[in-house]
Every structure is written in C-alpha cells, then in structure tokens.
Image (tube, rainbow, N blue to C red; front, side, top):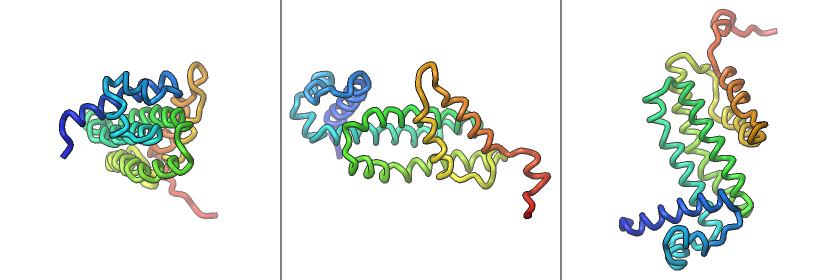
Length: 188
C-alpha cells in the first residue's frame, strides 16, 4: 500500500511535470522537482528517467479519460458523451505528440500497446450506450472510430483547427439514418 505522503508527492510531481512540459518541452528534471516542491531524490525514486515521467503523465491522462466515461454517460446523451470524450481524447493525443520527443520508439510502442485496450473499452461503452438508444449504428466498430480520430489530433491547431467540424462528420457517419432501416443495402 502506498503511503499518503508518497502518493501526494507523486501527484505533485505529475502535475508540475505536465504543466512544465506544456510550457517548455525541454524542462529539466531538476526544474520539475523544484516546481513540485520535492527533492531530486524523491523525483528520481518515483520516476528514474525523463521517459518514465513522460510515460506516467500519459498513462495518468489515459486513466482519467477512461474513468470519465460513466459520468459522461450519466449526464449526457450517448452521442454527446462521445463528442465530449473524443474532444478530450484529441487534446490528450495532441499533448502526447508534444511529449513524444522525449520518448524512444520502444516507449512509444509500449505506451500505445498499454493504453489501446482501455481506450477501446471506453469507446465500446460509449458506442453500446448509443446502440441501445439507436443513435449509433449497430455496425459501428470502436477500432475504426479510433483510427478515424487519428486525423483529428493531427489536424492544425489554433485559428485553423478543423478538428470539431471533422468530428461532426465522423459522428454524423455513426448516426442511424432512417434510410438505413427503410432500404437495407442490396447486392449488385
């Protein structure tokens, strides 16, 4: 069991590192320790390398995203919950790509493999809720959706950000349309 002060130190380190890396990707480990109000020994005991710290930040963000699904579904209709969740996912992926310079190709592969299952599970929960309400097509696949969202986090940011209009197109494609039920697909 992790002591509460040790957990608090880790939380402070992650928060300080997340903010520091957002402001300047070249922030040193010592600067992060100072921002977190911990000594270098505490920082390195918890995160022995810059890469370990970046991976922990990313894992923490994925855990937060995956954990947000039940609350979103409790407060929003499924497609709106999916829109909100996907917008958060796009933000997290953009941050991950910003932190990516600190990760080796092996670490990139590892974190992708480690987080793929939980992310697909979260999308599945959102899709299942929409399918039950007949607002998401029965043939919609979480893996396909995740692949499509890759274009969103690679889209331009700032004034040229097209991620929301692109997301609207993706969500429209997921929708159940009356013509889908009235005119089933016919063979050639």
